[in-house]
Structure formats: C-alpha cells, structure tokens
Image (tube, rainbow, N blue to C red):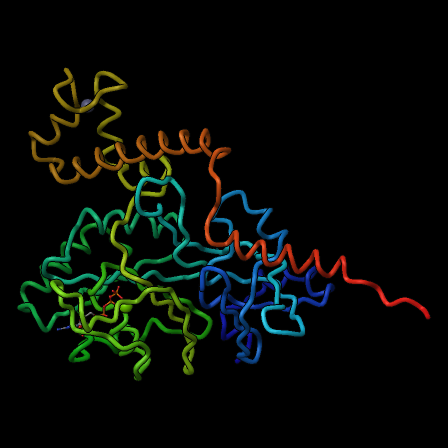
Length: 370
Ligand SMILES: Nc1nc2c(ncn2[C@@H]2O[C@H](COP(=O)(O)OP(=O)(O)OP(=O)(O)O)[C@@H](O)[C@H]2O)c(=O)[nH]1
Ligand SMILES: [Mg+2]
Ligand SMILES: [Zn+2]
C-alpha cells in the first residue's frame, strides 16, 4: 500500500518536507478511539497513536484537533502508545457540521474526502430540507455530493424515481443514484466513483444502510449490519465510530455513525450563494431589513403570489437564516463561557498522558559517569 493509495498527493508532500527532516513519517488517521487514534503509514502499517502536546495546544477549537482522514506527521516510538502525532497537515477538504445539542462547536466528520455520499431512502427518511443542508455543508467543505436513494427494494420504482428527481432538483451538481444494498441494485454504479486515492465518506440517518452499502462495495462483510428493531433496539449493529477503509482495488471509504441532526455550520456567505435567486428577489424588497412577512413592498411575497418562487424554497431560506443567527448567538455566548469551561473533552486524558510521558522523559535520571 503506497501513500498515494492512501490519498497522499504533491500538496501534502510539499507541506510535509520540514517534518521529514525531523525523521517523522506521514500517516493517515483511520480511526478515532477518543483517547488514541488509529493511523496508517506507507506499506499499510497500522499504529495506535496519541496526540502530541503542541498539536493539542495549537488547536484553538475541537475542529482543529486531528480527525479521521487527516494526514499527520508521526513520530514513531519504541513501545506501544509511544507513537505521537507531532503535526497535522492542512486539510484540502473537510466535511463538518455543528455538533449535536446546544454547543456551537464545529465537528469534523471526515477530513480530506473528495466525495460525500449522503444515504437516504424514498420512504420516511427522505427530508428535502435536511438534504439541502447537507448540500450546503458539502459545498462549503470543498467536496462533491453523491446521494444514494437506498432501500429501493422496499419502494415502488415510481416512488424511488420521484425521490431521486426531487433531490436532483435541489442541486444540479449532485449525482443521485437509486440503490439497494440488499439486492445489489446499482451498487456497481456507485463503485464507479471509487478510484485510487479518492476518499468517500458515507453520511445519513442511522439505519438507512450506510454500513450495508460499504459492505456491498467491499464485497465482504466489513461490519455486521443488524435488523432494526426500534422498540427493543436489540440485534442492531449501529456504527459507533467512524472508520476509514482502504480498498484493495483502490479507493478509500469512511463509514460513519448515523447523523441524528445535521445542523448548519456555515456562514452567511455560503447561505447567500445557495439562495442567490431568493437573495436577488429579496434585494428588491422596499426595506433592506424586510422580514418577508407582512412588510409593505415585500418582493418575496409578491414572487410567491405570482408563482415565481416556491413557498418551500422561501421557508428553507428563512430557516437557514434563523439558524445562522442562532448559531452566532451561541458562538458569542460560548466565547464568554470558555474561561469557565472546566474540561475540553476526553482528549484531555490523552494530553495528560503525553504531558506525563514528556515530563518523565525530562526527569529521567541521566546516566552518570562512575
Ligand atoms: N430492504 C433493505 N434493507 C436494507 C438496505 N440497506 C440496508 N438495509 C437494512 O437496514 C438496516 C440498517 O442498515 P445499516 O447498514 O446498519 O445502517 P447504517 O446506516 O449503517 O446505520 P448506523 O450505523 O446506525 O448509522 C439493516 O438491517 C440492513 O440490513 C436495502 O437496500 N434494502
Ligand atoms: Mg452503520
Ligand atoms: Zn421582503
């Protein structure tokens, strides 16, 4: 397994040059174990690694900490858990979202992926508003979007096609494929996206079939899937950690736990871009701070009344705007609270571990000449 198979390229190589001089080796993070990480190096060697103190201290927020998919400079030690991440290379793409719950912290789902594959179905999982948010997040991170309308064996061809068409209408750039991980429908179409060095991450609600699709693409059992039993939750093999898998025939897959809520993690700029048509109309409102409700001279209301703009699109526009305002509020609050925040996350433990090791190394009695 070469570095190129793992997604290495010239830009990473150039950034890595100073680290190579220190004897560190490039490694790609393939697993996040919370305290340690799994890392792959040239030749396909896997190491369990910890984060170095500088990497931790240089990160101004959690999103800057190493994440699955990141390329790092690894100092290989002599014993277990002596392998330390000394630096993280800049991300060429990054798929992230706001972490669940009340925090305003950004969460990196996968770093350096060129394709984000959103899995949904033509049934109850389908949610166009959520899909729109996925597209916004994917674009913002610099990746391309592929949508799989999975479980097609459970729905009529018309229903599957209707769902696919509705998704296509949201984003002309996104590829949309109707699949079934059970009967293998169109899995070959998805396989065409696999190329050596190209990383693809799978996202979507829990139970929608991400791991099953990864299995189907691998042609072997990667992770056991389970029967979804919403009542007992038994016999269910829900993915709990994200993991990067390198395919023998080329291509890199990142399986993810189901995403319960995709919240916005974007800025006004991206929002406006996504809704240029709506923004254009809004610019014709009489008042520049028009709320597009009952305000006099509202161009948006007029466009809806004349059927030039769908109510749904407006709702999406207003909703996103609201969320960004909310996010900004939380960010502000968070920066005020940050001093008081006692601990960061589990990684503090890893940090302490490294600190202790570094301290111990310094305090180690030096050999004396006797
Ligand atoms: N009928 C049908 N069932 C499917 C299909 N794909 C997956 N399933 C089933 O749906 C259930 C959940 O599949 P998983 O692959 O574990 O779903 P997941 O998206 O990885 O779920 P999380 O890991 O919880 O996020 C399993 O029982 C699968 O057998 C499909 O195309 N058709
Ligand atoms: Mg899974
Ligand atoms: Zn208006």
